[in-house]
Amino acid sequence: MATSEIATYESETKPDWCPGCGDFGVLAGLKRAAGILDIDPKDILVVSGIGCSSNLPGFFNSYGFHGLHGRAIPVASGAKLANSDLNVVVTGGDGDGYGIGLGHFIHVMRRNLDITYIVMDNGVYGLTTGQVAPTAEKGFKTKSSPEGVIEMPINPIALALVSGATFVSRAFSGDPIHMADVIASAIKHPGFSLVDVFSPCVTYNKINTYEFYRPRISKLDQTGHDTHSMEAAIKRSYEWGQKIPIGIFYQTERPTYEAEDAVLKNGPLIKQKPVARDPEILLREFM
Ligand SMILES: Cc1ncc(C[n+]2csc(CCOP(=O)(O)OP(=O)(O)O)c2C)c(N)n1
Ligand code: SF4
Image (tube, rainbow, N blue to C red):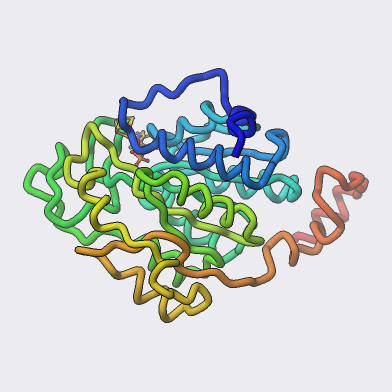
């Protein structure tokens, strides 16, 4: 890929992340993926919540929306319903998406809106200086869990599989080239796509580091994994230890919410002529 293609998505605002933060790899991966698909910046909307990772839309040249903590999915859903021609990408942290925003995460998957969700999964609340987040491993000590985390971590891959996501994948910030291919496939996929990314917080998580992941990462496409088998995907989603799989776990096709919605069948809302309706009649219809 030519550097100029990546430069298309370069923002004037430079990232303020700590040197070495995994989120740099995600930004690079997203730019490269957009370049692979040759998407015009005007046709991409990047939506986020609040967190270090959620600052990403400011560093990517496209439409962007920096929202509220845990509320990126509702904003992205509204944007997609208003303009279904847009490539809508949501970016944020595991605290944002799997903690406070968990309800939205589950419902958007069963709806199968055509949105790509990139979660920068680092096991901590980076922005608020290192409290425990939902994917932190049992026993992990943080300033909000000084005796070690008691509860089990969320398994986002297994959760996405059973919640109806039609594309479920994982990537690693230490390999942005592989990540770019996964993100490009996710954006191309017609339906909801999850890209959970191991994105190390070099400042507050001294357990899930680049050095932790590098020897453990194993690419699913090199192990004969069948991406159309739910059973195989569920099994692989529980692999954690000496080998941790990345890549596409599962992909299937199901009509999107947009395709099934009676009004959106006539095209994106923004391209439809407003229909004047008598508010009295409209009210009666909903009573
Ligand atoms: C409603 C609400 N609750 C709490 C906060 C404080 N807060 C800001 S970011 C954040 C967590 C960030 O963690 P994560 O989403 O994992 O992103 P990271 O910073 O690790 O990239 C919290 C709790 C907030 N902004 N709004
Ligand atoms: S605190 Fe952690 S997540 Fe936030 S920018 Fe620094 S390294 Fe990245």
